[in-house]
Amino acid sequence: MRLNRLSYLIKVPLALCIVSVASALGIFLVTYYLLVSYIGLESMTRVQQIASTLATSARGAIAREEIWDIYQQISAAVAQDPSTEIVVISKDNLPLVASNPIKYPVLGSRDHLPSSLLMLSEQARREGPSHRIFSLDGVTDEMVYGAATMAVSEDGDPLATVVVYSRQDATLPKLRDLLLRVLGYGTLALALVIPFGWWLGRRLVKPLNQLRTAMARIEETDFMTSTSMEVNREGTDEISQLTRQFISMNAELHRARDLEAQMQIAERMAMAGKLASSLAHEVNNPLGGMLNAISNLHLRGISDPFVEKTANLLERGLQQIQESISALMSQARREHTILTWKDFEDLQTLSEPIASKRDIDVVWRVVDDQRELGLRSVPVRQIVLNLVLNAINAALVRVEVQVRVVGQALHVRVKNDGGPFSAIEDAAPTPDQHGRIGLGLWVCFRLTRQMEGSLTIEPTINGRGTVATFIAPLEAPHD
View 1 (cartoon, rainbow, N blue to C red):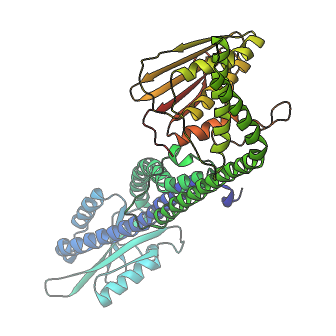
View 2 (cartoon, rainbow, N blue to C red):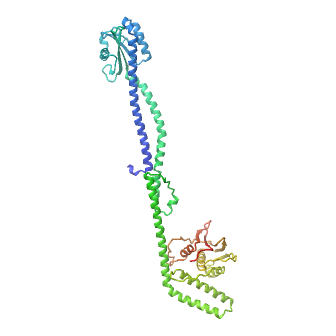
View 3 (cartoon, rainbow, N blue to C red):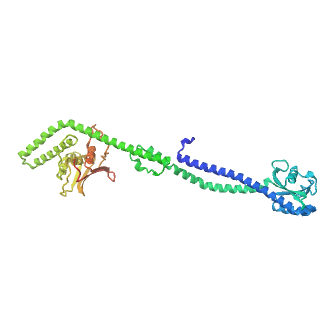
């Protein structure tokens, strides 16, 4: 598996762990080399000290050739360090006495002495105390640390050479013990360093992973609010700079998207305005004629109260149609009618035929507190009527409409017990099952925004129906 297929959440911590293990291995090798050097130097120093001490302490016994006294002093030195062997070589290169009499017989022949010991003894006679590492029998596997010191009389005459040597493999147990300790402590340290290195690596890569996640979700409109990106504002490293640039770029991108959405809304409104303008000449004339007819009817007087109520309802409905069309025409002169509580009675009357046709029970609860509403009649009537008609079309049995004033705002709540009639504020109008494009809810959202109000459409808590809530401030600004 190639490394470029792994995430940096794995590669960086893994790299830190590998570096930690490699560093521990390097430290172990260096420690091994230093221990071998130190133990070798210590062994060489020890045999030098033994040779020098015996050459001084035993020179009287050597001068008198008291073999037993020399042997006791040699045995005492070997007892303290069993890995060493000592040989006293006479001026004639003959073994005078040794710690191992069997190997080197007392006053034996020269043939009993290895050539390497003789060479070391000759070197000590010529140059003074000498030491070196050599092979005792000419075999490399049996290397020894050797030292030789000349024993001289009080007059300065050479008496004999004290040769001390120690096998190199005798230091292996000590070296092995030290290496096992180093290995144990190193393993314990790695057991602590590796998890810390893994945690540190993931923490270092965390900003980069957050940036990658944010870039992958850049198409979402609200990902910056749902994704917390920890940014060090004072950081000057590459990831901090890149993150700040990305956040700035994302903000510019969303501003561009918002501008595009506003342009789309403006285009839709312009299309609606063009549609209204094209229909204005065809609609305004019949509307004007009908309004004139109703005005003439009022001038002549109406004796039947039912006919008068119907005529008033028709007049207000025609005025609403006229003002609705005028609201979509930028060149039209607008004349606003103030909303009254009587308008809700008209809406109840207008919705009754459709409710009766679908056998839906519509319950109106209008809390009339005799307060001046101060709102434009046409947009409120259009919004409420659209919500009621959508609720009737989606209802199974019942629709509830509640109208009241809460604080300084008009609250209208429309609830049905049937399917949803949800709508998205910025969504484009879509054709219905008959191929007709409905502008009702979309226009309701636009009108609500113009009134600085709010309109929410959501399912009920139990999921059996839909609730539409329209809120309009009583002191909404007028265009």
